[in-house]
Structure formats: C-alpha cells, structure tokens
Image 1 (cartoon, rainbow, N blue to C red):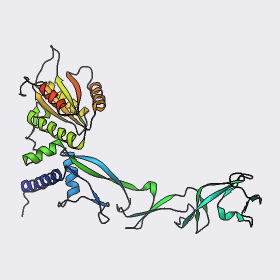
Image 2: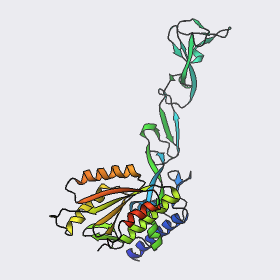
Image 3: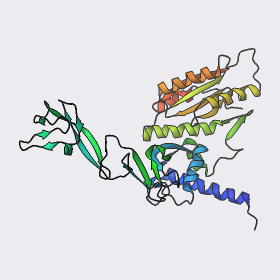
Image 4: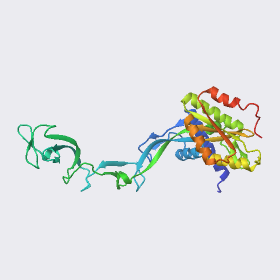
Length: 341
C-alpha cells in the first residue's frame, strides 16, 4: 500500500498541536524528569511516541522556547549515560585509592602521608627524611591538604586522573574525553499560544504575511503575541521589551516593494531567534523582545543600528513593558495610523 504523504503530515501536525495544547494546559512549560532507563537519563512525561523530537521541532519553528535544563555526560563509544566516574592511580590505573592527609615537616621540608611518619611514645612523630621528632603542630610541622594512596602499587598522588567506565559497554574513558548532550525544558511562546487558540499550526501561506519578500506577522497576530507576552509578565514576572521600527526613507528614496523587504530581512537577521516582527501600520513595525529588560533592549537596538549601517531607512526605538499601561501607551500611539495595507 502506498503511503499518503498528506495524511502522514496531518497526523504529525495533529500530534504536535496536541502536545502544545497539553503544555499550555499544564502551565505553559514542560521539563524532563530523571529516568534511569531512558537513553540519556531523562524523559518527558507526555503520551507521545517521539516527544523529544517533536519538542525540538516545535522549538525550531518558534512555537516553544528551549531553555537549558541539564548537561549529561555520555560514553563516546556507545552513547550511554550509565557511567561510573572515579579517580584512578596514574601508574597502575587502579581505582583502589585511599584518601590520606599530608604532614609537612618544617625543619627539612619533607611532605608525606601520616603512615610514613613513625609514631613516638610521647605522641610525636619521627620524620622519615631527617629522623628528627616532631611534637608541636603549627611550629614543627603542619597538616596540609589530602593525597591519594593507591592500595595496589602504593603510589601517592595529590591530583589523580579521573576516568569513567561505561556500565553498558565497559569502555574506559578519561573524563576530559567524555561527550555530552544537553537536556532542555520548554516554554510555550506567543506563537505557540496562538496556534493552540486557533486550533492549528501555521502554514506557509497562513499568518506570516509577505511584505514583498520579507515575512512579518499581520497586525492581529502580532497583537496576540504582545498580549501573550503581557500575560507572561504578569503571571511569571518574565520581562520583555518591544522595538518599534519605522520605515523612514529619505525624501528622494523610493518606497517601492523591494526596499522594505530588503531592510526588514536584514533586520530579522540582526535580531535573536526568539524575537518576532509584525506590521502594525503601513510604515510601522514592531519586534517583540522576550526576556529583554530596558538595558538589554537598548544594547540590542544599538547593535542592530550598527549592523544595518548609516544608510538604513529604519528608525528604531525600544520600550520595556513593565505593566499594562506601558503596552497600552505603545498601542495608543498607533491610533489613527490605520491598518497595514
């Protein structure tokens, strides 16, 4: 039987939309939980067969925001996370090490582990180097840090190497040669919340509207994103700012279809992956800047202006949204400008 690509795509989209909905219903976030039987020690609690891959795809498509959760060391041979990490003897490679304190004899400078110093009947110690007796801690000798004594070959070392033995395949690997993977938690974004509200993921010809060849969001959608960020600010105390972008070419510059697209595309390339751009009016756009306070937003604005160069026809300004009235003030300033064409 020949597979139906359209049907397969619909099944995948439905599954991912359902995953988004579950995340939204559970507070807007999902984090991995420790599971010894999982391949990399963590798993996501969700009734989806390929949940980790779906989460990564949704993050790449900006429905979710990935955040660092943990780093997991792996065996470079079999990719397993079941590792026994321990110090080993630098000579015989045995892990049979004992931790011992160190004595430092001031008179001759000898440093060694306590068993090397012969105990005296009066409570002192006899130095194995100069054969003098040490009685007074702090004036004749001192206790230093610790050293490791190999019970196999007797070698004493202060900083023995660290090695991992894989409990799955038996490979022995120096700790510095281990590979690793990162486990992420995910937060639903404004785009993800809008997809849940609409009951479908965005298609190529859906909400990203084309201004010539530059993809920006329609006014209604970017306003939904702004309101969602406002909710995150009020409920999670998650800061955000907005960058107002005005198309302001000189009087001699042509306002043709290609020029705005060219500069908006350049602007998008200067912003972060999580930043969204929407059209608010004919010559006015807004970039939503999640997790950006006033100083961060201003630093970003200056960097963007530098990258765009002095001939840029885009006029940029930033505002941190701290409460409802800040967003209301930004939107009120748009009154009378009309909808984008």
